[in-house]
Image: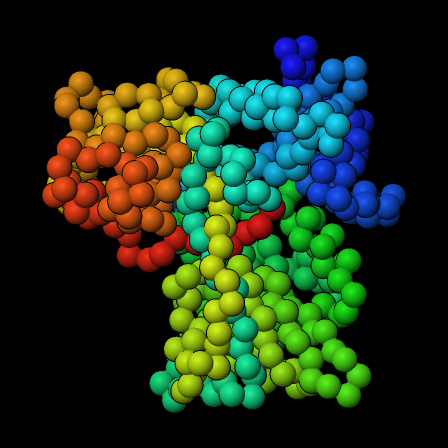
Length: 398
């Protein structure tokens, strides 16, 4: 569709974009009351619309920061609200919107973009790769006994008012250390969480963990109960500063009465919840799925921002959407810079995103044909180059 025009929407057009996005997900649009609560997640200048003679596609983003290996934070665009009218799909509308958005990110100096994909086959062609994965797990509460050596200390405080949660939880999150692939939560993120919490059928509660230096973790949960039966607790958001606060939050969750099982979804792959217990089988992993899809918008700045290990290598990167990224980069413990040297590794920008925060071993992607190396030994060197001390996890849905 060559006649599609993509532009930033005016604020009085945001609700139409919201309705289009909800319709694409087969969800009813928010009521007037719900819209008043969620409208603040729409950042002026960051909401795009595609038009023929009417609005037929949309995507939006909010500004945040991404933590990269080594602890540096880089400018990030958190992308969401992507949708196309059902009678205008498969006509290039999405391609027009995504290319416009990525070009805008590059012009504004954004280093990376991140999104959660409703379908796994869509975003790879725009240079997004699976940067992180998560697991869903279920804890059988009556079988879950904490081991004697599990860290202890600190106190927990129950918060049951959503208004108080909305006031206090952002302050707690801002105090926490963020590991690689986590993102900052700005003021436009929190209204979305609390809009979702207010739509829950049951009561929502939060518990704040207090350590020696003040609040250092929180968990938000709700309990679904059938009359006469134990309930199912659903952990909706849980973040922590260290092993003590993590164990303290789980110690509290296991103490809540009238609960038979605890469902903890969207958790990091290396969270040690199962080995907290004398019987690790009290925790069952039910799914492992893709989490954040990462797009490196400025490859040179992204490579220079993170830390690297081992011997330097020359990476040749292909990027058909943002061709300024294409080229060869010498990458190593001393940093990253463009070079004309012969490449040791060839990959496209989506595969680079997959290894950038340490979510995938490059050798795995070599075996899958996503990365090409000069010789087999290079795959091991590349594994060492990108190695990180922890498995990356975002933990912030948007």
